[in-house]
Length: 67
Image 1 (tube, rainbow, N blue to C red):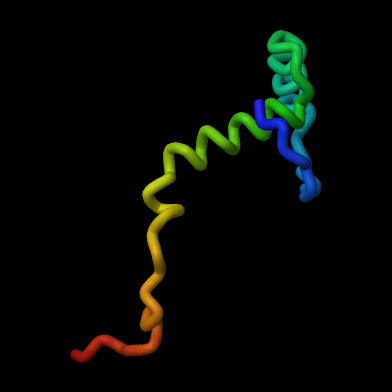
Image 2 (cartoon, rainbow, N blue to C red):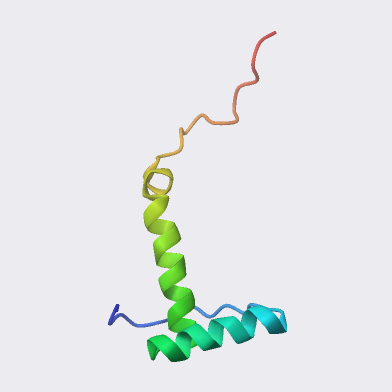
């Protein structure tokens, strides 16, 4: 678990069924629903590490393809 300061807030809407499932898993893991969501986000970001670390070309979108 990250011991960093949480400084961004997000408002997310869930349907009742998904919310109930999320809370059931969170209680089983003895964490909050928010912590469970943060874990899921970290997992997705880890899987997409290469995409996240790609540097965009400074010329991207400046030139139109010839043809």
